[in-house]
Length: 98
Length: 311
Image 1 (spheres, chains in turn purple, yellow):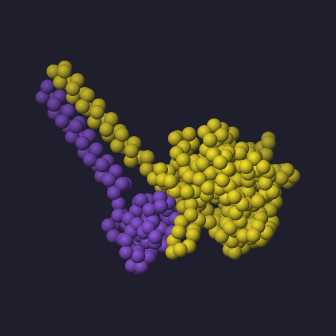
Image 2 (cartoon, rainbow over the protein chains, first blue to last red):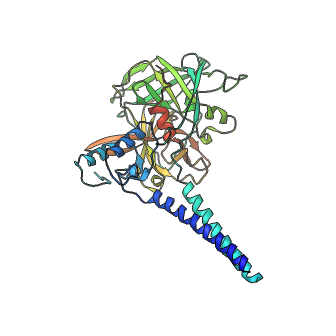
Image 3 (tube, chains in turn green, yellow):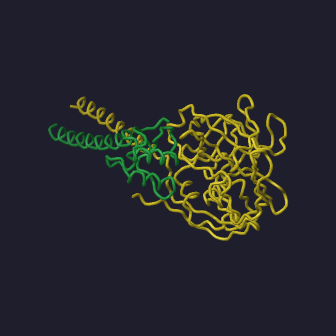
């Protein structure tokens, strides 16, 4: 009985750790800062370059939702223009709704 | 003891199911579809296979489609999109066919694979020739007069996955129904359509999508080959078609619309921009929807960053 309990505890603990790890991944996929395309916690030139490379077909994106800077559910060149405008402070917030 | 063990097993089963559902939930976020794909290159004038290549994902870090009208006919003549191309092809250098294409680069036109490729009977599909050759590509002015007739198409690029699925899947079900045509003429004077990758969330939105092309009939009457634009919205395909590589919409279409751009219109700084989110394939009459090839990361790579293009 004790042995069974110990095995059970280990299995449950292992599963909990696995669930915990997945939750973090899920959270990373769903929680984002608009404009933080590379998920490094900042919005800057590195994000703009990552987004421009994606639109040019030369690099994959880490976070699609963060790259959708006008929140129209499509990632395209206009998102790069808006991100650039935000970085040079010609618009004050993201997502930009025009 | 037995009751306790059974209870624990039930708890374990529940936890295991939870783990599975979480894992499945996170794996569903793969709509970018970034995979290795191979392509065949054909001479646009003779149909001969002249090469092939593979595009690998960047390391991190007139078709035979039938007429589908949904609700009232809502297409109107519209020559305002100068980058939409009237595609005139021939089968075996004789039977005329057609479709629609659109300019994506100064020397590149995007269209559907089924508009630009057909196997020759009795030959290997992958290694044999293409019986479709490009007769001309016509671009129009905003008043409907011809702006340019391009007769110097050079290459046709077709995904090998389209060819490999050709026997098994109908056009509407083949998720690789896209192609490119290169031309010697410079098309910089015409609207270049930008490509955009639609997020999953777009499917639930009420955002209007448009499709411009050259339908053979509108409102049950034959057209004279005019350029028409229809409007509608994205509809859920409910898993009937490849959910990652296909898009379903309720824009009216007819034979001749194939290969045309399905696009959204975005306002930015008081100007309108058109972003293509799919390439029209075919109608699905059984489900009263139209189906197109979704622009994914693979297609961005194919059209926007393809080192194998020659013109």
